[in-house]
Amino acid sequence: MSEPATKVDEKKPKDHQIIHVPNTLRAKVGSGSGVDPELIRKAQDAIDEMAEEFRVWAEKDIMKVQEMVADTPNQTGDLDKHYDRIFGVVHDLKGQGGTFGYTLLTSVGDNLCHFIDNLSAPSVDDLTVIAPHVEALRAILKHDVRGSDDPIGVEIVDSLHKLTQRRR
Image 1 (cartoon, rainbow, N blue to C red):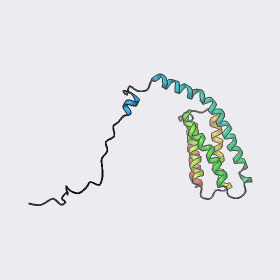
Image 2: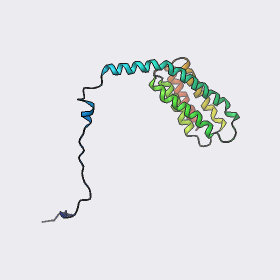
Image 3: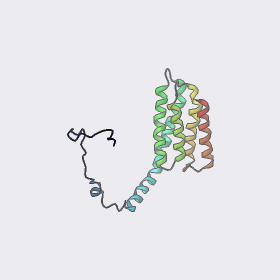
Image 4: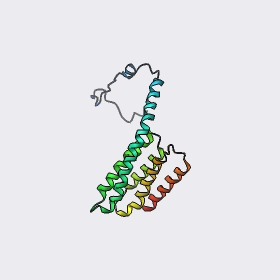
């Protein structure tokens, strides 16, 4: 008859302790009947109201980015910080775009952010990719293109993606 490969020493002290914490979440949030549909409707109404404000904010941000892009050839020295500022504004736009239904804005912004983020040696030549993205962002807002099913918008996003791939 064979013996087990290892024996447990009953007298050896345990090297760990199991702590059972009571789950008090249910007591804090209720019986789980769900979220009040009225609260969801009010939240959606608030987002809908803010959507027009977002458009105004976003247009100002895009004008700021356009100014930065136009000023790029005047930058002296390393362009890292300059492109980081462009990245920051576009990153905020892409993050907020989806909340307000501008999914193409988010797609274009995401593509531009990835491009800037992956630049190893930023140069003025990168404007051949950055400028068309900024123009696409401006056009999306100008024409109030929402959603992601606009065929022209999808074609623009695909073209911009191909442009960034060629430039890398």
